Image (tube, helix red, strand yellow):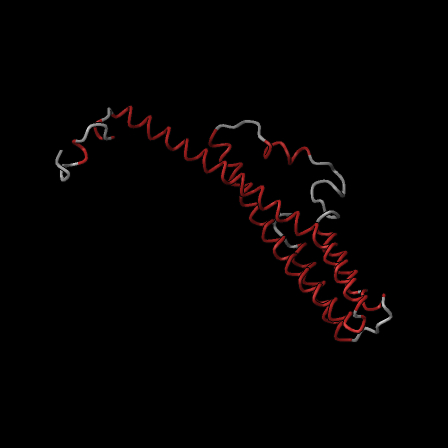
Length: 190
């Protein structure tokens, strides 16, 4: 066989198939690729939700670690509290970023489900099935509340050890708490 021959003259090439067979093959390939993408995006959605949950669960544990450090080095309690506050602010920002991407993924997945003809899926079921309470659709207490509560408690670390808090410590701490609150409550996910 001549390696320089046109690919259309080779047996099994798509151009040698009847037009309806080519159309069916392309349609099947497109559906297969759409299904593969759908599955990959569902996986990414679940991974981002896992990261959000881990960030939330780690906050109280990190606070306990900082409080333990402050107990062993009481004069450094304000610095320890500020380090925690800035770390928690960064975690809040990451939590929000994951939330924004989760919304994008969910929206695309729902549109893909409509295109693929899926009539009843988890993504279409969930919005109408959430409890109508404070712990319902927005889960404020179990997510955003965790970040804000542990940050508020971190501000109290120095005073809980009878260490006087300076004006600068309180100013910086309240600014960080305000920045976290702004991030968490302007998140488009909610």
